[in-house]
Image (tube, rainbow, N blue to C red; front, side, top):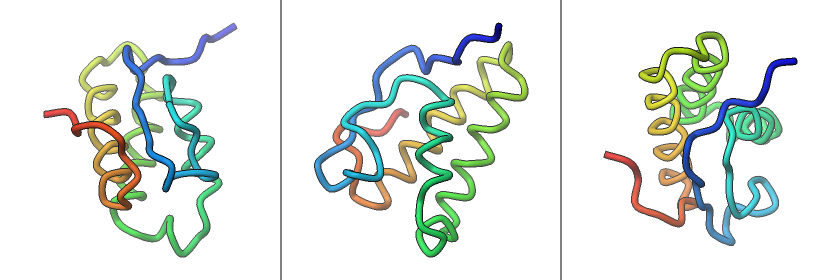
Length: 91
């Protein structure tokens, strides 16, 4: 059984993100599920396509910490672009 890939931290979203995203995200798989449920008009924005691809790359190469870091940053950038991030984006 393959376990979920943890970001190694909790990514916090604000109330504007709901109901699309929960108040916190902890795994790549949880983030993928939420991104895939976005309305098509929202998902078409380049920041969501970038986040989606980065998240899938992290799943495809789970031992590559660099890809996980890129996925974290891309997800946070997409959330921030929508005004849904409740934390400072990672550097």
